[in-house]
Length: 144
Picture 1 (tube, rainbow, N blue to C red):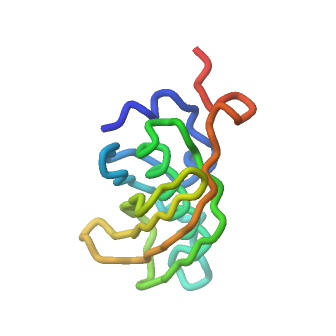
Picture 2: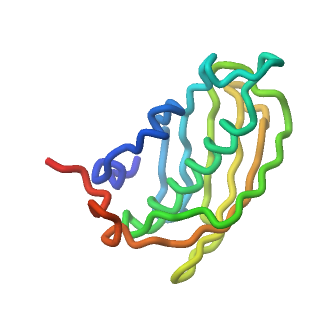
């Protein structure tokens, strides 16, 4: 696992989504995260509303950038393209994010969401503006 996450405060949105790191590989920029799709995320059809799934994908893609850059960059999503493949039921969702390419100011990332049996639920590609963490108001660093 990557210790890079120990250097940063977990954002409130990650807590809302039930974000838990499974694995992270700084060399490849691949991150796996477990999310908790809670009943509050449900739509009238009894499945998870698509906006929550897009948020999960966005969160795992941003995590991949943070890991690949060893904590030097976070990112602001410029464009996010999501494909909803199957209905998502309340419960565990596994997200995988990867850095496809990272330049000096823009990263291209992709990812998927699967259920706990491995079935594909949704996928996404995104472009994101790289933001040096030292330019954030608190530097993003956890206060000791």
